[in-house]
Image 1 (cartoon, rainbow, N blue to C red):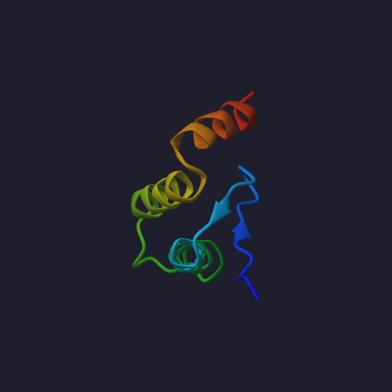
Image 2: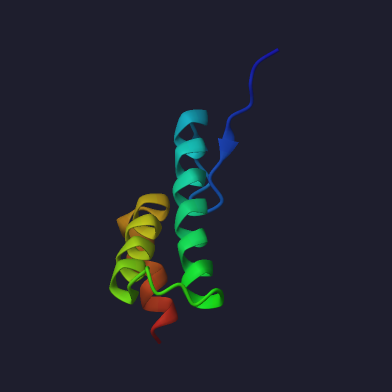
Amino acid sequence: MPITPEICPHCGEAIGGQKIYSERNLLLEVVGLAYRKHHLMDDSIAWEELSDQLHDVLCNVMGDELYQKWLKEVCK
């Protein structure tokens, strides 16, 4: 029985299993940092560090082109 690849919710293309697993781990790590900073008031995480991490993970998961398109939409 063939394995059905996962589909990227952003672009609709098939994603290799290892890539989606890696991206999920990155997302979980950065969401954890955001939660710690915003809700647990964790001062060991600097705002600039969190901002950089969020930017990097969004670009990695969405891709630069989709990130730029999304950024234009939210900054209207």
